[in-house]
Image 1 (cartoon, rainbow, N blue to C red):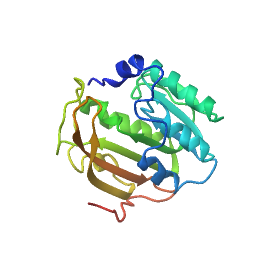
Image 2 (image 1 turned 120 degrees about the vertical axis):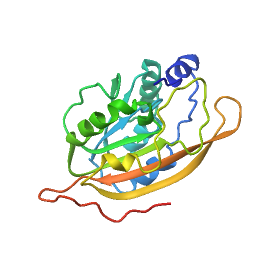
Image 3 (image 1 turned 90 degrees about the vertical axis):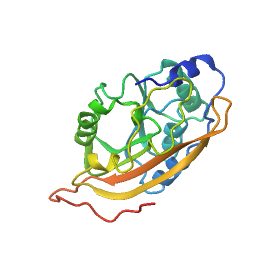
Image 4 (image 1 turned 90 degrees about the horizontal axis):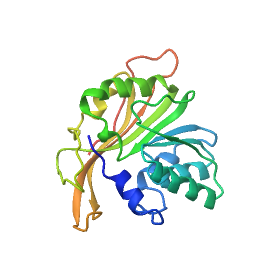
Length: 212
């Protein structure tokens, strides 16, 4: 898999190509969390969502493979007076410190190759406290636009939920997002998923979902 964004972050050291305000998905997830929750932001890029979560009183660790992206993220956090822990490296290979209440990603985990995903999601679930949340947005194969030479194993609709057997699926939504990062207006098809880990003593708790 190949993401073009590390190159773009290096190319634009003084510009936040995704902006500095949080994604809509981050706002939706934050509304369900209590201050003090420990959150892992995978593929945090330039840090806009990590810094937003920190501003909501969460204990945040942001992860990205791009040193240039993390440098921007640090600068944004410092500008806003927020404290965030940052890790640089491959999200599927890093060792993470401790357990988390929330594992979050927005437009990132589709860069993990399909052959490595089962092990990847299993590792993330082991890192999650009982009753914790996973919240992801991934690109799907319903509307494909290859941007800046990226290479992605696109998720099929519903594929992401298959990694969450025994969890309660709180939300599973398909949709499309507008983009013009390469100068050509286009869309990507996406799917969002929010799932809750079993609480102690629970099993087979797949519950009602919101599907579109």
